[in-house]
Length: 85
Image (cartoon, rainbow, N blue to C red):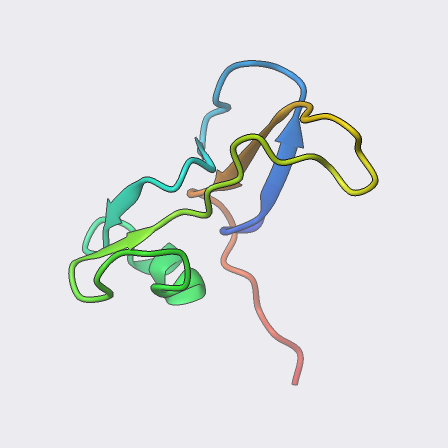
């Protein structure tokens, strides 16, 4: 299965799948993750010149969830999504 770059998924297991990173708010270098930065920009943090941040979804619950469950991961190596205009 292929995922879109920037796609956020909630998985019940406790390890990071290949091509994903934990949505933990970490800063990433723009020069290494240019395509992901093109999608996210500095919306979640970073200076927008050399760094940007992933969303921080630690402790968040799925919609209508009553307790945190699973872990949220973002695809950092996938298909660049295209737009239909």
